Length: 310
Ligand SMILES: C[S@@+](CC[C@H](N)C(=O)[O-])C[C@H]1O[C@@H](n2cnc3c(N)ncnc32)[C@H](O)[C@@H]1O
Image (cartoon, rainbow, N blue to C red; front, side, top):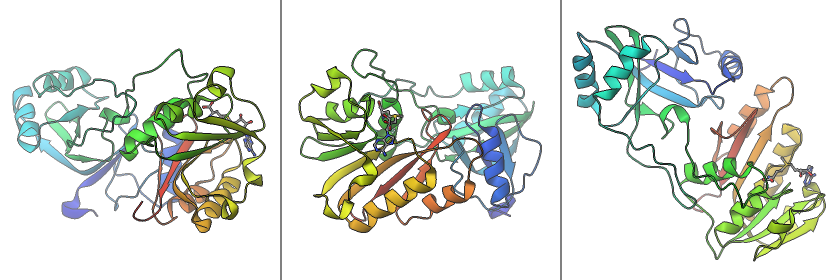
């Protein structure tokens, strides 16, 4: 059981509840009650679930007598709350209306996540709240809102890298270098170029002409697997959106880490068919790594790693 017998809540991304359920089952996490749609609860010790859009820690059950009372109980705990309430949603909305406003302003390129804690609540019964002050996502229900550019990038794939930098609370700077592996048609390269950093894009396919023309962008034709990280000059950011088997990507990631030539890695782990939860755990077990499902990921996860002290 968790501290004080409290529950942990795992909120699945839209359409990916099966992945979260399978991941929890593979890790031996038992569910404590029937799921509240995408939210599952467990009394077992929390795990770092990659397929969770948000994890609610130390979920409290709070008996209330009215909507006003529920809002008061939440306000007394902290300022910012997000509602996820598939049950009694009309009543939960009335509670949310009595809470302080949480800014939903989309985040711009170069910005990072707000650091004020954001709690989550649901109604289990009309007068029974579930509430967690500590959640893993800084966004309401994990839903990051970003300012989209509909003209510059040739694809919407750049949004997942954008969200990754926001979550990392760090962006490339003009004095830094980036390698974009599997770069075509160039959404990620476009985003990296917006930061002023120098970008080398690697792909068998070319970049869209407008991206290839951007200052400090260079395209090299070839396979990312043909590069030897040990022979590569130091590079600040290695980003990969290559379509390949997760285990092949894990080998590539390990080679970059072992070579010591990269400061940060951000890679998309893509899945086809049945998900190999074992390989996800291997990615997550890399010292200094995190594996998250970002709001802009599809059937894929994002791997983050930074060299110690980088
Ligand atoms: C999902 S797309 C990348 C989209 C890109 N991030 C963007 O924002 O436009 C995947 C790319 O990986 C490339 N690719 C596949 N295998 C590769 C390899 N071994 N080395 C480099 N690129 C590879 C494909 O040619 C394809 O262009």
